[in-house]
Image (tube, rainbow, N blue to C red; front, top):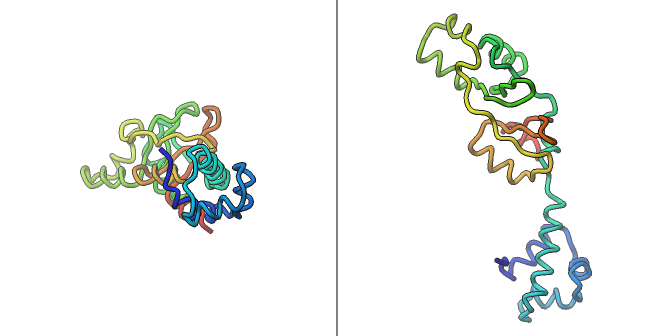
Length: 185
């Protein structure tokens, strides 16, 4: 389904394109684009399709990707590690969650929220510290490729604490909500 014709001008301007640039790439004249944006003509489906294709391609090229905002150093624990190691790493690195990796494969996650819930329910910090991460870990963080657009990252971070960024199945970095907020700087 094609977007509204009235949206073409806004999208062209948002992409930083001039009418003549869009016209050249879409194979139409600059005056055609001007008349289209002014609502003075009823274009053919094929011409609108060509214009929208160029706009979408330009928008995709201009979009920030996961690779550009990820943290390349991934702090993690292994399933057999004690919870005391996880809390120590979180404190040392100033993070509130991290993945649980087994031989480079994501098998779960651990967060300060999970640890606080354990403390609230048990109350004995010493017993909790000796638990294996595998016994208390949460589900794994989602995996995305390096070229995933930031709009997808934003949508995922509404539901997950962090996202792991991969290249050919290998974990290359991590993105948290803080990284996303810092991307606008």
